Amino acid sequence: MAGTAGRAVSEHKPIRPQWICQGCGAPWPCAIRRGQLMLDYAGSMVSLSLSLASYFVVACQDLAWANAGDLHHRFLGWTREHPAGAVGYP
Image 1 (spheres, rainbow, N blue to C red):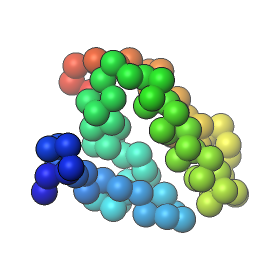
Image 2: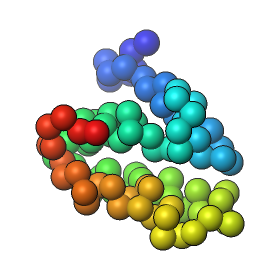
Image 3: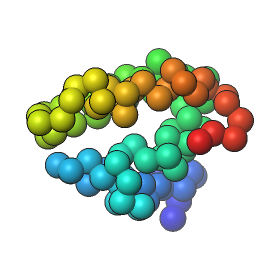
């Protein structure tokens, strides 16, 4: 299925309030979605970080029982481990 910009629409979307992946059942963002996001935002790490930060805020509200540090790494920390343009990610 094509998106409005001609790109494929990902099946790896979050299911709230559990924040699991609709496509594979892994914690969202799953490895596949992370790879897709890196490609989608190649060269725009600030934009990627801002987008993920908005998901992080909502996830903190939905998963109030979860460790904030773990959620931070899950939603934002991985972007520092895999810089934009990293080939072969995830």
